[in-house]
Image (cartoon, rainbow, N blue to C red; front, side):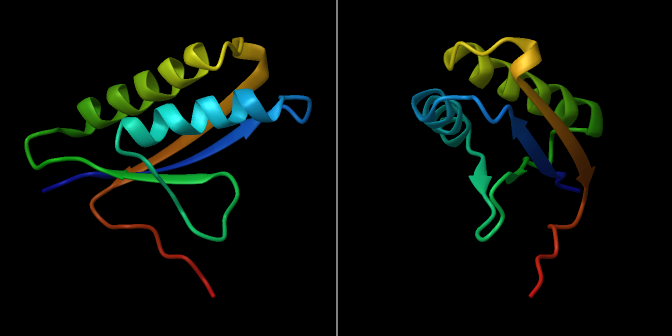
Amino acid sequence: MAYRVLATLDLKNKTPNDKRDKFYELLREEKWAKIGGLTTAWRCKFSEDVDFEGALKTAQNDFKKAAKAAKLSDKDWKAAFMIGPKQPTVVP
């Protein structure tokens, strides 16, 4: 079973656009995709050989790596992850 991750990301309002862009650029390089119409939601699908713990660890590392590349401290951002076998449902 392939795991999918839904992530929500909050960057502090004072975060400059160039740092936001760098954060997003790195996530895209790591194969994350922004969910259309949702400003802070991202998704990623892992291969069948990645277990739940591997998907969680990779997701955490990808976001930490993006924050580091954007030169953001831990106080400047937060993320939450939901991991499961199905893709997120977006409405409308």
